[in-house]
Length: 298
Image (cartoon, rainbow, N blue to C red; front, top):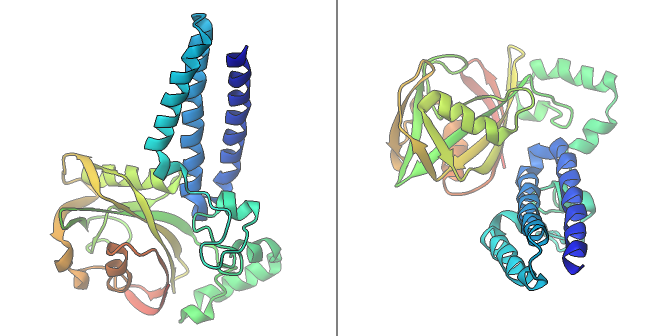
């Protein structure tokens, strides 16, 4: 009887967590870590549910619920750094967070300490958005752009694998930045999460699968030819597979203290050293072809 009641409670709790995860998908650009956390929580609850079902199926004594609970708690402890990412107070000022900040924002800051860009996007009229889009093309400075109204032409990812004092870089053979040195990356496909794209692009370009990815930055680019791009930056501390040259890239390992910035995009030297030290970067850049006209890095 007790097992059935617990099983029923766990089932409804798991459904609630999965529903929360579905709503988090709309906020992945600033809440991916919490979206993954709810998936881990749902997985742990499913494991506990399976334990309870097996106890009931084989008509075992309800005393077996005790070791089942212990296993459930042990799994939760093992995954604590992945699931305990939700805070109820602002990490900057200590103010109480609303449910959106608790559930959807990875930085656990209130709206005063971290004003949301989305609020302007939701209230902007179509006429205002169209007018702002016309102005973006002519921007020569990041101060000329209303970044709350700005929408990129495309979204992409870039992934740095850093291990034993070396970072994985590539000689890019195709697409934007052809001929330059960069890290593996590329455009996010429809329906794909940024972290999934980072893994896929790294595999396709280098043959390696990055492990333990961490979101380390968001980069926004406007080009004077009308093209614009928002990029999600990821770092990994390990990998599997064997490195190989592909049609898209020629990968190589480079000492982190000797990165060839003159052969890379002009913005890299301004933010990559900070990201390599563990800082989260938000960068905005204006480019005229390969020449950087303006930058803003937080």
